[in-house]
Length: 124
Image (tube, rainbow, N blue to C red; front, side):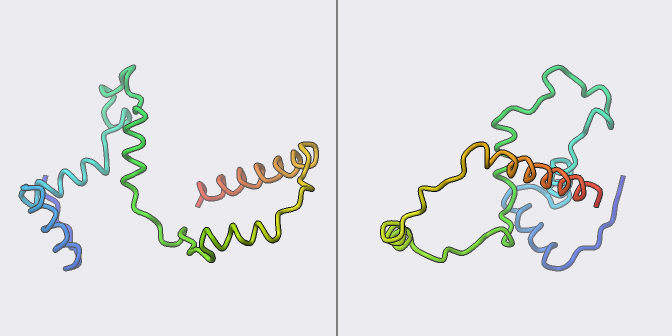
C-alpha cells in the first residue's frame, strides 16, 4: 500500500538524517518508525495472543527511557545543595509532624482527587 504524507521541511530533513544514520532507505526507515509506534495488538491480529505476551520489566523500562523529557515538568533549582543544607541547619523543620491518624484522611482525600483527575483526563 502506498501512502503519501506531506511533512514540513524540518521533519523531512530529520527523517532523512536518521535514515542515513540507520543505513536504511528513507521509506524503510519511516515504515520501521510507524511499525514501532503502532505495534500490532491482539485486537488487530488475534493470533498474537500468547501466554508470554506480557512485557518484561526491561521492555517497559526501555519504553519509559525512550520518552523525551517534557520541558513543562522541569522546575529549575532555586538553591544549591549547600544553600539548602545551610538553611536547614539554621532553621530546622518543626518536630511537630502529622500523626498517622491526622495524615490518613488527608491522604484519602488526595487519592480521591487524583482518581477524579485521572478519570477526567481519560475522558478528554
